[in-house]
Image (tube, rainbow, N blue to C red; front, side):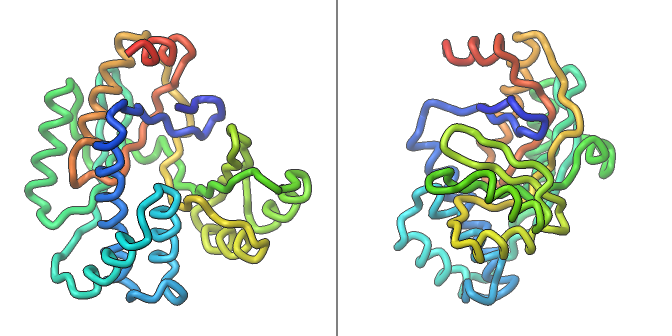
Length: 248
């Protein structure tokens, strides 16, 4: 978990790694499917597919799985619809849930039920999103990068914030600069571990540990749903909360 910089998205990690990997692969396959339907199976001419493949590699998805997903998507007649839900979790924490679904009614019902079960409520469009900024987010490995020189070049391409985290460098930029940042990293010969658009909270909300854990239960329920791709919120991961979670 990372709560050290103002734009961090906090995610509750589960111990069941195999189940988690299966969920991640399923979400990536959906993204590959949508990308292929939108722009064709050639990654060279399809930027969205290229990003999905990069994210698949970063998640250690086997190459054969990626190839099968692309081939299947090209022939798949399933209509996956992108949906974004906004609402509030327990104790007023704003939540944004991104989904890819072949059944809108099923997904709406499931998202509403999860909010209700965990003491939150599904809101209307625009009720939460104003508390977030839509940002381009790229992650690259730190190995072999001269950080000072790298920062100068990537800032010219639109980077607004550059964060070192363990063995990675995370680059944040405006939504509109996604393509510029991607092209710049590729031109510099730097392999992109992951690339995405995220909802980044403008401010973070701090809660007592027990209240924060209730919010994390809600987030976990969303992430367990097969239609959910991403969950965003502004809960601050305090040292006290992190210590409590590490005991579990």
